[in-house]
Amino acid sequence: MPQSDHERMLWLVRAAEHGNVDAQYELGMALRHGHGTVQDFVRSAHWLQRAAERGNALAQYELGQLYRSGTGIAPDNVKAYTWLNLAAAQGVAGAATARDAVLRQLSPAETRDAQTEARRLSEVQQQPPSPPAR
Image 1: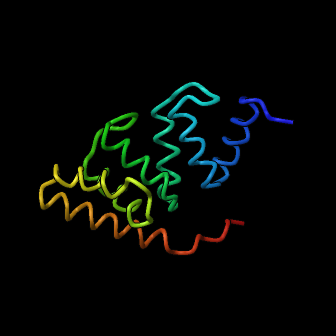
Image 2: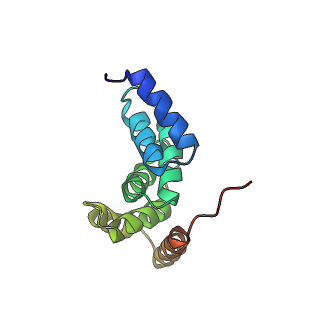
Image 3: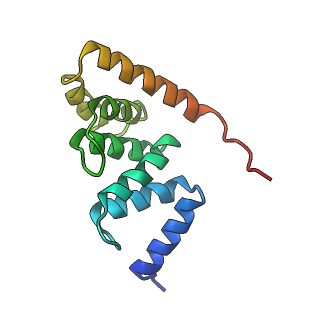
């Protein structure tokens, strides 16, 4: 039996709050597009950020685009480049093109900062997760 949009959103929120990266991404996208819920760009950015920080390549791409456009989040081309660079490194379609478009707007110092942050985030994401607290 198919779930209602309301039930689906309840389950997505629960899973996202419990750290399920795929649910965090799906919730962020549902909020961004208003699928099954009221459109909320700020909450969308929050959930996409959480998923992106945990290595979800699609969330990294979407978050980079949000930083690029300033939708639900303060526009920031350095952060846009950082997230789009991480998504491009994981092979997300369109990420390299979007990253390169942002690159043309950055100073050399901003480019260095963005690349340094992308390396740091990539290293953090490759570390095994901490065991749950007891």
